[in-house]
Image 1 (tube, rainbow, N blue to C red):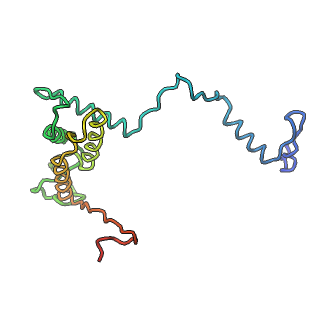
Image 2: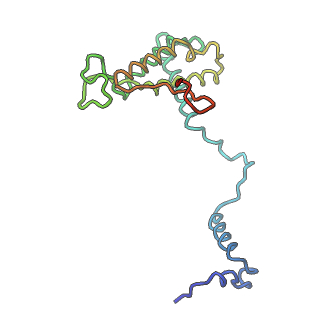
Image 3: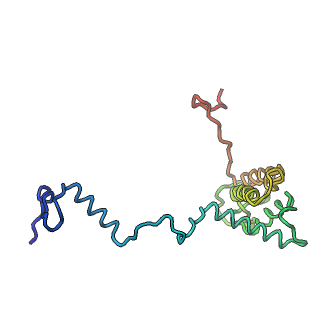
Length: 196
């Protein structure tokens, strides 16, 4: 049967096998470091063999969205070059994406219009959710400028697109019974600016 080592004995382990005795707090720390370092090669941060850091999720999504939009423009008859793209093509693209949507948007004649959680299925269409479209436009607006487009001619940043997104938001909010409230701005005193 093995005897438990006391804290005092642990601090005075045999010096001939492991070097000079270490205080107990250093033994625990050293064991922890040894476990972490076992089997690892020293890091070489200056090596040219290291792969470039992987892009963030946002950057990856932005690139996918940009490529998808470019493919959409190339599939138009006649094909549209990105430099000739305007807000009309952007609106057509957003409407095209609705066919892949997963958000039930009740039509005004539907018995579930305005109900956030309808009790039964209906034949109303699935659409892209407003939040998804808003995020998509933000990524495409950034990608356009990163790919050489000027901010002044950015078709994703036009007033027409902002109005369309606002209309989709309001329509979906009414149809699904989900109120979107404007966030109140807080004043320096911490109270809402709308309360007087």
